[in-house]
Image 1 (spheres, rainbow, N blue to C red):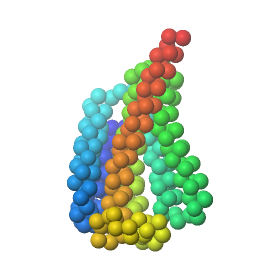
Image 2: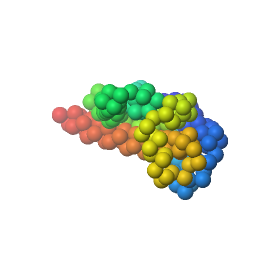
Image 3: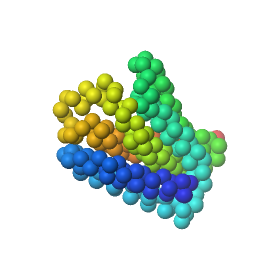
Image 4: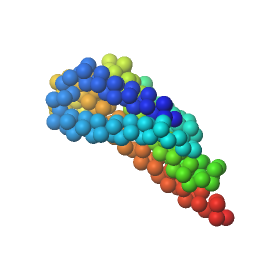
Length: 214
């Protein structure tokens, strides 16, 4: 788990750096210093957890990694369906909604499953946190790379073109707008996925305690 998270975190930092280097005008957005600063703090926290996991092995982290990777793939499919896939609206909503829900369920389920299987509070918590960390870092890489490799398809979407045309964005072109948007969204997922994992870990702790007392 430690190496998986370490690799994903370093890759996320490199991917973010490449995205900004490719579209440097993203830094002109007044919101950029805020979300990029938050991104730096979050990635430092992710890196710290990875180093701690490497130095102090704990039960449950391997299972959490499996759940985290599955959740990240589910989130990525949801993003793909709502972006480069260019599906018709009903199918887009159906696929995107299904995989978004699946990603949430998988992330929360990690700690719950560990709690029920092991009846170990620590293992349940570590499994949930690991799922959140791994899914967050992995999704960040997948989402940003997906956007960078499909800018043409995304720029052709009517909804993105309308959003860009509203003038609320300070981006000089739609490619810069799309890159800034995914960086902000992926940064938010670093928090969202970790919170979901922590919720699952907390539920797992409760279930493990109840199972041991039964």
